[in-house]
Image: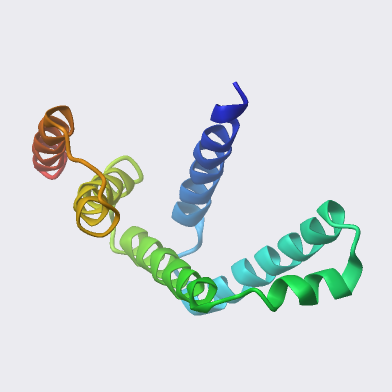
Length: 142
């Protein structure tokens, strides 16, 4: 059961994320909105660090000393994802198609990334799933 708690967190967070992003006023500049989004995220993660670690500021600095470029790449990617989602909704995509199309597309590409860079197998059932996903995208967009 505990194995599925992160999945439940991702699902619930994605639902809040997508519905909130879709509800951002079109008149609001996406970059102004993102500054508030990331300020909120920074405050939340800062508080959560100190709740989960009793080592204080020195512990945070110790953790920062372990950082490599990937944390910065994730940060830049998150900005791209958020900005893309905000513009997707501003341009009229619906919540029941825009997110589905992007998620399926990312999933298909990640299958091949997993194969090429991480040695993960694409089984026959996964290949059939990819075909069904592509068919699904075609149906959703027509």
